[in-house]
Length: 365
Image 1 (tube, rainbow, N blue to C red):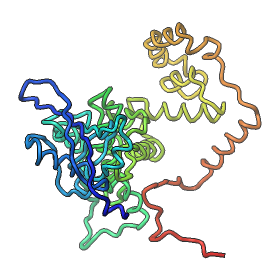
Image 2: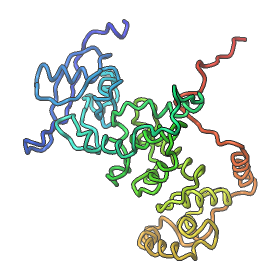
Image 3: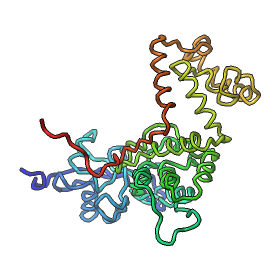
Image 4: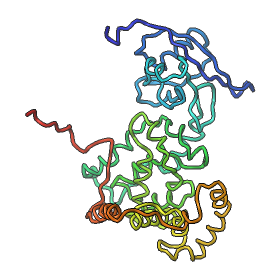
């Protein structure tokens, strides 16, 4: 039987309910709905709302994975309720019940509705989300190379659903972090050749202690995004532009830290953790640890270092000596560096679009 014609079956939804105005604590509420397995979780919630409890709060609009309004967590994972089939959600559940709760890192207005204005849209506004024209403005239109527009296509695909914000671990630790959605939006204009303030935008975000160097590379935003925007990749591209193109030396030591990291791996094949901090603050060489800024940072880090030693996560000699790599392996690492650094132009990898109108298939033999 075709999937679209499968008969309705019972699904149990466990909804997270919470009304801040009531003064009551959040609680779980279960409803059994009847729908075809190919129907969406959103349709299931709306059926429960229509049949059992009209007070269930859920935000939705297009029902076609375009508007991003119905972002929720389903079985602990962020997603669009309208884009998640009931049978798929059931298969991912732990106990045969589909759990639906509001997104994280944002205040709950009611039930599954979060306050996007308080966090998400506020951070989008932070990055000046519009084009700043270069002068003089052409009489008709800007002529932009096709490759340049391909470069920003991935970040343009964002539908502002907030799924990446919901699961961002950096925002859990630092709520002031500009965040993955806003920084992906920032690259949309930084990467646009029509924008007049690429350097100013990058310097602003590099100097901000909650900006591009506050990302911890956890990959959660890449996993969460329903549109393949890969916000973390856009953040890394902002960093490359700031450090590689404009050589912005920021107060967060992001540029120095990157140079130290790259230099240590190039010289030793593996990261030498004990040298990373002093070289990031005192200079990218062996004598960096003797610079005053490096000494101050090392003193501030003594409690952490001591705790690591006491818990045997690191040994004194293991920290003081660089990792050893066989000579042949080290040569291969340096060969990679020589290849990358020997290119006339940096290769920008955009995973959203290949740059070709159609995929080229090999003709059958």
